Image 1 (cartoon, rainbow, N blue to C red):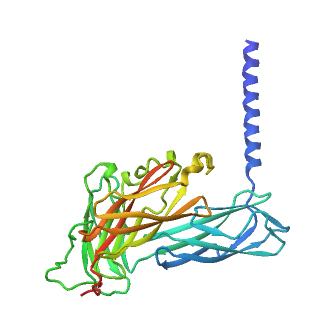
Image 2 (cartoon, helix red, strand yellow; image 1 turned 90 degrees about the vertical axis):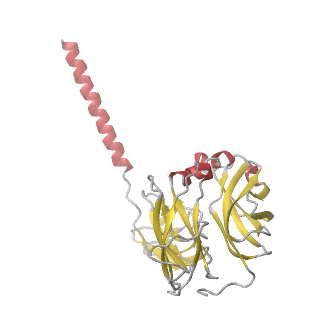
Image 3 (cartoon, rainbow, N blue to C red; image 1 turned 180 degrees about the horizontal axis):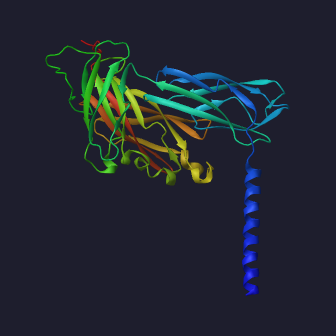
Length: 359
């Protein structure tokens, strides 16, 4: 009986010791962030043109009673360049100007980025934020087609930012389905409500975009991303094995005249999150070929150049096939030494003389 009592008492003591150790460790891990102010805490560029590179400036102001030293600077994505470097010292009562550039996608929608800055001897990072709204002359609301959780149909609104009337020529590759509008009898408007329906196809055949075609020369195509279980991470299951991906999921060629072509940049970016970005296969960036997977489009590789952030920029020439008309939505395949990936192209094939908006 006495042995059992000692055993119980020993277990209680051990549990208490472990509990005390856990509390001590948790107290040691709670390190306050650096008393450094970010001015402004967020730069909001507002509405901008898709594909823009936006320069901004933050000021880091030291509120501590002693100098602080930058330990690390980590942007949330490669879309952000920052002038601040590790080892920068901010004196007591001093400040440092930080230049930051946000590159917004070539497709419309909101884009935000964060810059995490840690300081020697302090805990949680200080954060600077950037935000922009990439906007076309004709805006879609919402800016996507929400086909999640079994939703197969819905509506979107498209409106011209300048309130000028325009015509919708097609939507999703077919004649548009309007709500409370008859194109045969009603005059062109500055706002339309369009019905959409989700295609009943297998995941590997699922389009990533629903494209609206208009008669405006400055905005012939309005791409809306399909939000669906098949169009998220499942859209490119092979990127880990080949160690790269295409960050821009749509090449928007806009209006191309019959018989002509256009050269568009395509960036491929190294991908190895399991090894924190370490390059284990240097040949990942050796581009072997670019080809169209559609008879409506011809794609050829014009050249390539290495970037500065483990990426490569390709120059791809896109030309509509001689018989192609209207909107082309076609996949092109890019192959490197480590594998292949597909990216969609959208293009409006038009006569050499553009039709004025609303005519």
